[in-house]
Amino acid sequence: MKKIVVLTGAGISAESGIPTFRAADGLWEGHDVMEVATPQGWTKNKALVLQFYNERRKKALSVLPNSGHQRLADLEKYYEVDIITQNVDNLHERAGSTNVIHLHGQLFESRSTLDERLVYPIEGWELSIGDKCERGSQLRPNIVWFGEAVPLMEIAIEKALQADIFIVVGTSLAVYPAAGLMDYVANEVPKYIIDPKIPEVPSTPNLTCIEEMGSVGMEQLYRELTKDI
Image (cartoon, rainbow, N blue to C red; front, side, top):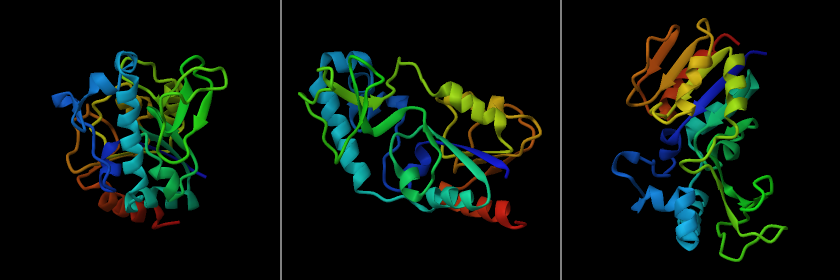
């Protein structure tokens, strides 16, 4: 069975109603990203950071996967599919995808501030001051903040190296190290970028660009990838 590797970004979840993050103005949902998405912000004001991610969880619980998510899940009927996502929501899993790597962490998980290996699911939407790990330290969102290492990057690179087909959906390819994953895909491998604004990429062999939203583009690509199966 051929392996499809998919890199997804904020654009695919935007169609479900989750606002995209844009760093150009330094704001995320009206907050300075340095205040809510850095270790320094956490040290300065834990309550603000926890409130911010509580609101993100509330929003994520109020939306549904869209047809872009669904078509990626449907591809598992015909291919081995690995999704590498820059998104922290769980919409891929809710659509039915079974192999999802969250490069930037997971919104519905917390982790110990004493031992990052201690990770816990968050039931519902709230994480509060006083919620502690088994070793007695305050829990923080299990999110990779600016300035922190991306621990799953090596696994993502391994997946990219194994791809028979590589798909990019809904990302500007501007956030590293994730944006560099295409560099690890073999030249002979078919590559597809789906986005209403195709990002600038260096000369890339076997690249097809589909200038559409994720839902429309994935419907087109799904038909293409399954027509002869």
